[in-house]
Length: 331
Image (cartoon, rainbow, N blue to C red):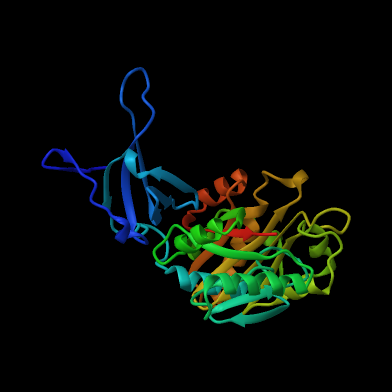
């Protein structure tokens, strides 16, 4: 990280740079009598009363005292990814929303209020893709009221880490007492490499609907009601995969939604007794092959940041992080 100009460290950012991506160096606590420095890169989301807030790619907010700055500059947006399909944040966000549709929704300006009787945060959170048409505090009051009318906790889904994401909204939510409850990575990759994975796809059965056996393997709910089946079944072109198991319960399942050039992978689950047998790869390869037949070329998926095993699996399949999304909740 280079800050020098003619051999000198300079602070070349001001409060007018709020909203821009910056790189700063600050003086930390001395260790063993030696000055230490800490570097931070992210979006400058506020600068008030001598304190800077910088939101990193992962959504973490860093507080920095202005008095501790020794260098700072505006830097270009995060560089374009070097592998996988090119995609903007808003395009991906809308594709993901179509792949996991709520039971009911209502517009709030360019935001969308979504509910599905509490089944998953994705289907029960406000999706803010644009201007709500009213001041933010009024929009959040409407969010709280709308979910309260349905006996649901109020959530807002917001993203960080790519050009056009919502670092300033995330910071504004935190300032108002909303807390980040869970975060996930949105990953993208080429579809053909997934279809070409070495896997026994002959064991995988594909269907347009989630049958009772598929639902018994699905771990997100106990006894799924009609609202669960409705969310799972909705989308532009939905496919379900399963590998036969014991007792009428599949050894592995998966779901794929094909939407134009995109194929999204969800609900990939394997019976613990059958793990490390390549079943997840087989499920994804079979679904990818079908998506290719429908004209898709790019793939996406979501994985929670604390799911190390799944992240390692997707690393090996060539999926790279595009951005992060977060669900914020308030009482």
